[in-house]
Image (cartoon, rainbow, N blue to C red; front, side, top):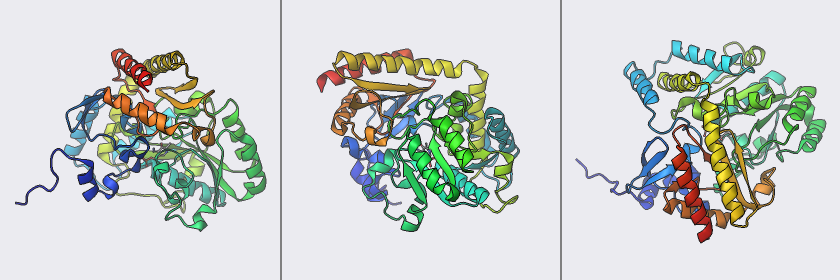
Length: 429
Ligand code: PMP
């Protein structure tokens, strides 16, 4: 037998010997904060433990999927049972149909869905459907939104895509030329783009609530105006609710009262397992093969283990009519506490909160409205804050373009501990 090549304790240098760049997702290398995220080996509830045995209160929450808390028993049991029954079958599975039905009942805008494995696939496929349905090619999206790492989505995107130095590397000019990137919250820019290119534009895709340039909220009326403009120009409106879909009952679209043509879901849907979906009206979804010409498929699409996890998650959400209210109350507690601490420190950073997501940037004045404003935030101040919080046992996202997620497992005490750590960290900076 060969000696194990990976020494314990593991360090980042060893990771770099075997994983490209030491990571499977660039943000994990922690460039914006000067050090890789700790190697997390386990999680229970709101807490995670790293390879050195240090425990943290977790606000990274895997960038959104974790909503019940780590190691949830109901999800673990559902996954184990499904795996015992045969993890993958390669045919349609009854539970997959039942999950599709549950999603269609949950979101008014969904009559048909198709499952895929990641948010990247969901967004990429929704755009392909829109192109086929409309017979048009161009795509409008917004800088600072992130819709996965497909060719047409990755340049000028938000979030961790910024950690790649050359955003357009590997993306052809032909692909880039079909994409119009506009500032978030700028309805005049959308009107002008559609005025010029509406006849050539298949879709507008947007994060309904944007979680990839920090937390950035749509201004009052922006989404309504987007809805009427797209309708007027025969352009499909795609809501990327990969982050928001299961952070409110019925997603951001129900909360904000705007109905898209296509919706992309993922992250929390699988309770930690990789499953995503996109869907819309029966008429639009008829574009998909075998009914129509658009091919979207996958070996792991509708995977029974992931589907079982999703049912377990929805069972928990549906069993408690106050689930989201309770979760949001914690987010409000954290947001109000942070705002108080920031004000006490004589700073004017705006804390932003929506559902169970909280964020602030090291940027004075009112909350940012778009990516250009988000980019004004002081990166080195955030890096210092991140490191101070880490030393105090709080795990934050390693980039200011991400945000803090609350789970059902975060307790009031966790939040009070977090606020004490934030106060001490800010005071030490
Ligand atoms: N859309 C949004 C809004 C996202 O935040 C992400 C992931 N951060 C994606 C799409 C892509 O999802 P995935 O990483 O599962 O491919």
